[in-house]
Image (cartoon, rainbow, N blue to C red; front, top):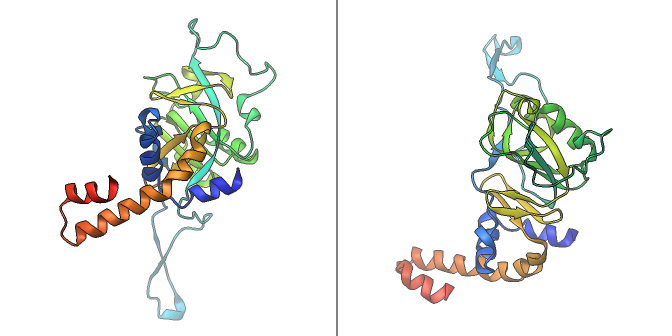
Length: 248
Protein backbone atom coordinates (compact mmCIF):
# COMPACT_ATOMS: atom_id res chain seq x y z
CA UNK A 1 0.00 0.00 0.00
CA UNK A 2 2.77 2.48 0.92
CA UNK A 3 4.22 2.75 -2.63
CA UNK A 4 0.75 3.44 -4.01
CA UNK A 5 0.17 6.24 -1.48
CA UNK A 6 3.57 7.70 -2.29
CA UNK A 7 2.65 7.71 -5.98
CA UNK A 8 -0.56 9.64 -5.21
CA UNK A 9 1.49 12.50 -3.71
CA UNK A 10 2.48 13.50 -7.26
CA UNK A 11 -1.08 14.65 -7.94
CA UNK A 12 -3.60 17.20 -6.70
CA UNK A 13 -7.08 16.58 -5.35
CA UNK A 14 -8.44 17.89 -8.66
CA UNK A 15 -6.44 15.26 -10.55
CA UNK A 16 -7.86 12.56 -8.29
CA UNK A 17 -11.43 13.74 -8.85
CA UNK A 18 -10.83 13.86 -12.62
CA UNK A 19 -9.79 10.20 -12.48
CA UNK A 20 -12.75 9.22 -10.31
CA UNK A 21 -15.14 11.10 -12.60
CA UNK A 22 -13.78 9.17 -15.56
CA UNK A 23 -14.35 5.96 -13.59
CA UNK A 24 -17.94 7.07 -12.85
CA UNK A 25 -17.40 7.14 -9.10
CA UNK A 26 -20.30 9.02 -7.40
CA UNK A 27 -19.56 12.71 -6.98
CA UNK A 28 -16.00 12.10 -8.20
CA UNK A 29 -15.17 11.35 -4.56
CA UNK A 30 -15.27 15.01 -3.52
CA UNK A 31 -16.20 15.73 0.11
CA UNK A 32 -17.86 19.07 -0.58
CA UNK A 33 -17.57 22.20 1.57
CA UNK A 34 -14.90 20.75 3.85
CA UNK A 35 -11.75 22.83 4.25
CA UNK A 36 -8.61 22.89 6.34
CA UNK A 37 -8.56 24.76 9.64
CA UNK A 38 -5.39 26.05 11.25
CA UNK A 39 -4.57 28.61 13.92
CA UNK A 40 -3.83 32.16 12.92
CA UNK A 41 -0.27 33.33 13.43
CA UNK A 42 0.42 35.45 16.46
CA UNK A 43 0.78 39.19 15.73
CA UNK A 44 4.32 40.45 15.34
CA UNK A 45 5.83 42.51 18.14
CA UNK A 46 8.71 44.98 18.24
CA UNK A 47 11.97 44.01 19.91
CA UNK A 48 14.61 46.63 20.80
CA UNK A 49 18.01 45.68 19.46
CA UNK A 50 20.80 47.46 21.37
CA UNK A 51 23.44 46.24 18.96
CA UNK A 52 21.65 48.04 16.13
CA UNK A 53 21.32 51.42 17.82
CA UNK A 54 17.93 50.56 19.28
CA UNK A 55 16.36 50.20 15.82
CA UNK A 56 13.20 48.09 16.29
CA UNK A 57 13.15 44.70 14.61
CA UNK A 58 10.29 42.24 14.36
CA UNK A 59 9.94 38.63 15.32
CA UNK A 60 7.11 36.30 16.11
CA UNK A 61 6.23 35.61 19.72
CA UNK A 62 7.96 32.39 20.83
CA UNK A 63 5.80 29.38 19.93
CA UNK A 64 6.24 26.05 18.12
CA UNK A 65 7.02 26.60 14.46
CA UNK A 66 4.13 25.68 12.19
CA UNK A 67 5.23 24.33 8.84
CA UNK A 68 3.18 24.86 5.72
CA UNK A 69 0.41 22.24 5.66
CA UNK A 70 1.12 19.15 3.61
CA UNK A 71 -1.17 16.73 1.82
CA UNK A 72 -2.31 13.82 3.97
CA UNK A 73 -3.00 10.60 2.08
CA UNK A 74 -3.90 7.56 4.14
CA UNK A 75 -6.60 4.94 4.67
CA UNK A 76 -9.77 6.12 6.36
CA UNK A 77 -11.00 5.18 9.78
CA UNK A 78 -14.43 6.47 10.75
CA UNK A 79 -16.43 7.81 13.69
CA UNK A 80 -20.22 8.08 13.57
CA UNK A 81 -21.92 10.62 15.85
CA UNK A 82 -25.69 10.67 16.41
CA UNK A 83 -28.09 13.16 17.94
CA UNK A 84 -28.13 13.08 21.72
CA UNK A 85 -31.27 11.35 22.98
CA UNK A 86 -32.41 10.23 19.53
CA UNK A 87 -34.31 6.97 19.18
CA UNK A 88 -33.65 6.89 15.44
CA UNK A 89 -30.19 5.41 14.95
CA UNK A 90 -28.38 4.46 11.72
CA UNK A 91 -27.03 1.37 13.48
CA UNK A 92 -29.06 -0.60 15.99
CA UNK A 93 -26.20 -1.04 18.47
CA UNK A 94 -23.07 0.88 19.30
CA UNK A 95 -19.73 -0.88 18.86
CA UNK A 96 -17.94 1.40 21.35
CA UNK A 97 -17.34 -0.46 24.64
CA UNK A 98 -19.02 1.16 27.61
CA UNK A 99 -15.68 1.53 29.41
CA UNK A 100 -13.95 3.24 26.47
CA UNK A 101 -13.92 6.74 25.02
CA UNK A 102 -14.26 6.62 21.24
CA UNK A 103 -11.06 8.58 20.71
CA UNK A 104 -9.05 5.91 22.53
CA UNK A 105 -10.05 3.54 19.71
CA UNK A 106 -8.28 5.66 17.06
CA UNK A 107 -6.69 3.51 14.36
CA UNK A 108 -3.01 4.45 13.80
CA UNK A 109 -1.78 5.57 10.38
CA UNK A 110 -5.26 6.61 9.24
CA UNK A 111 -7.12 9.80 8.48
CA UNK A 112 -10.05 9.81 10.91
CA UNK A 113 -13.31 10.79 9.18
CA UNK A 114 -15.98 11.98 11.61
CA UNK A 115 -19.67 12.16 10.70
CA UNK A 116 -21.89 14.62 12.63
CA UNK A 117 -25.69 14.84 12.26
CA UNK A 118 -26.54 17.67 9.84
CA UNK A 119 -27.73 21.06 11.07
CA UNK A 120 -26.06 20.95 14.48
CA UNK A 121 -24.23 23.99 15.85
CA UNK A 122 -21.98 22.23 18.39
CA UNK A 123 -18.51 20.88 17.63
CA UNK A 124 -17.60 17.20 17.63
CA UNK A 125 -13.82 17.71 17.71
CA UNK A 126 -11.71 19.96 19.91
CA UNK A 127 -8.18 20.26 21.17
CA UNK A 128 -8.18 17.35 23.62
CA UNK A 129 -9.60 14.88 21.11
CA UNK A 130 -7.13 16.01 18.45
CA UNK A 131 -4.19 15.60 20.84
CA UNK A 132 -5.27 12.05 21.68
CA UNK A 133 -5.69 11.16 18.01
CA UNK A 134 -2.21 12.48 17.31
CA UNK A 135 -0.70 10.53 20.21
CA UNK A 136 -2.31 7.35 18.90
CA UNK A 137 -0.82 7.87 15.44
CA UNK A 138 -3.59 9.41 13.34
CA UNK A 139 -2.38 11.16 10.18
CA UNK A 140 -5.19 13.69 10.10
CA UNK A 141 -8.89 14.20 10.77
CA UNK A 142 -11.76 15.18 8.46
CA UNK A 143 -14.94 16.33 10.20
CA UNK A 144 -18.24 16.37 8.37
CA UNK A 145 -19.43 18.90 10.92
CA UNK A 146 -17.92 21.44 13.30
CA UNK A 147 -14.67 21.79 15.26
CA UNK A 148 -13.55 24.14 18.04
CA UNK A 149 -10.38 25.17 19.92
CA UNK A 150 -8.75 26.36 16.70
CA UNK A 151 -5.64 27.73 18.40
CA UNK A 152 -5.06 24.38 20.09
CA UNK A 153 -5.77 22.47 16.88
CA UNK A 154 -3.11 24.52 15.11
CA UNK A 155 -0.44 23.39 17.56
CA UNK A 156 -1.27 19.68 17.70
CA UNK A 157 0.60 18.69 14.54
CA UNK A 158 -2.48 17.07 13.05
CA UNK A 159 -4.09 18.22 9.81
CA UNK A 160 -7.71 19.13 10.60
CA UNK A 161 -10.40 19.58 7.95
CA UNK A 162 -14.00 20.48 8.79
CA UNK A 163 -17.23 21.90 7.47
CA UNK A 164 -17.41 24.67 10.11
CA UNK A 165 -16.56 25.82 13.63
CA UNK A 166 -18.28 26.26 16.98
CA UNK A 167 -17.56 27.28 20.55
CA UNK A 168 -19.86 24.56 21.95
CA UNK A 169 -18.64 21.10 22.95
CA UNK A 170 -19.91 17.81 21.55
CA UNK A 171 -21.84 16.85 24.67
CA UNK A 172 -24.42 19.56 24.05
CA UNK A 173 -26.12 17.68 21.23
CA UNK A 174 -24.02 14.80 19.86
CA UNK A 175 -22.81 11.42 21.07
CA UNK A 176 -20.38 8.99 19.41
CA UNK A 177 -22.26 5.86 18.34
CA UNK A 178 -19.83 3.71 16.33
CA UNK A 179 -16.31 3.55 14.97
CA UNK A 180 -15.02 2.03 11.74
CA UNK A 181 -18.39 1.68 10.07
CA UNK A 182 -19.48 3.04 6.66
CA UNK A 183 -20.59 6.68 6.86
CA UNK A 184 -22.12 9.20 4.49
CA UNK A 185 -20.32 12.50 3.94
CA UNK A 186 -22.48 14.82 1.87
CA UNK A 187 -23.68 11.97 -0.30
CA UNK A 188 -20.29 10.29 -0.62
CA UNK A 189 -19.98 6.91 1.05
CA UNK A 190 -16.79 6.56 3.08
CA UNK A 191 -15.80 3.06 4.17
CA UNK A 192 -12.97 2.19 6.56
CA UNK A 193 -9.94 1.51 4.40
CA UNK A 194 -10.92 3.86 1.58
CA UNK A 195 -8.11 6.28 0.75
CA UNK A 196 -8.53 9.85 1.97
CA UNK A 197 -6.69 12.41 -0.13
CA UNK A 198 -6.65 15.64 1.93
CA UNK A 199 -5.14 18.50 -0.06
CA UNK A 200 -4.85 21.86 1.78
CA UNK A 201 -4.97 23.73 -1.51
CA UNK A 202 -7.92 21.96 -3.13
CA UNK A 203 -9.97 19.99 -0.60
CA UNK A 204 -10.68 16.39 0.35
CA UNK A 205 -11.37 13.43 -1.93
CA UNK A 206 -12.24 9.86 -0.98
CA UNK A 207 -10.90 7.10 -3.25
CA UNK A 208 -12.86 3.85 -2.89
CA UNK A 209 -10.54 0.95 -2.11
CA UNK A 210 -11.61 -1.00 -5.17
CA UNK A 211 -10.79 1.92 -7.48
CA UNK A 212 -7.31 2.78 -6.22
CA UNK A 213 -5.36 0.70 -8.76
CA UNK A 214 -7.46 1.99 -11.66
CA UNK A 215 -7.05 5.59 -10.47
CA UNK A 216 -3.27 5.17 -10.39
CA UNK A 217 -3.33 3.59 -13.86
CA UNK A 218 -5.18 6.46 -15.57
CA UNK A 219 -3.78 9.46 -13.67
CA UNK A 220 -0.60 9.90 -15.78
CA UNK A 221 -2.60 10.05 -19.01
CA UNK A 222 -5.12 12.52 -17.57
CA UNK A 223 -2.47 14.95 -16.28
CA UNK A 224 -0.35 14.65 -19.44
CA UNK A 225 -3.39 15.49 -21.59
CA UNK A 226 -4.16 18.55 -19.46
CA UNK A 227 -0.58 19.77 -19.81
CA UNK A 228 -0.83 19.47 -23.60
CA UNK A 229 -4.14 21.36 -23.56
CA UNK A 230 -2.57 24.20 -21.55
CA UNK A 231 0.38 24.49 -23.92
CA UNK A 232 -1.90 24.49 -26.95
CA UNK A 233 -4.17 27.19 -25.47
CA UNK A 234 -1.11 29.31 -24.64
CA UNK A 235 -0.07 28.98 -28.26
CA UNK A 236 -3.44 30.31 -29.44
CA UNK A 237 -5.55 27.20 -30.01
CA UNK A 238 -9.23 27.44 -29.10
CA UNK A 239 -10.20 25.50 -25.99
CA UNK A 240 -12.78 23.34 -27.76
CA UNK A 241 -10.21 22.29 -30.36
CA UNK A 242 -7.57 21.62 -27.69
CA UNK A 243 -9.99 19.45 -25.74
CA UNK A 244 -10.93 17.52 -28.88
CA UNK A 245 -7.33 17.00 -29.89
CA UNK A 246 -5.78 16.05 -26.56
CA UNK A 247 -8.59 14.88 -24.31
CA UNK A 248 -10.53 13.02 -26.96
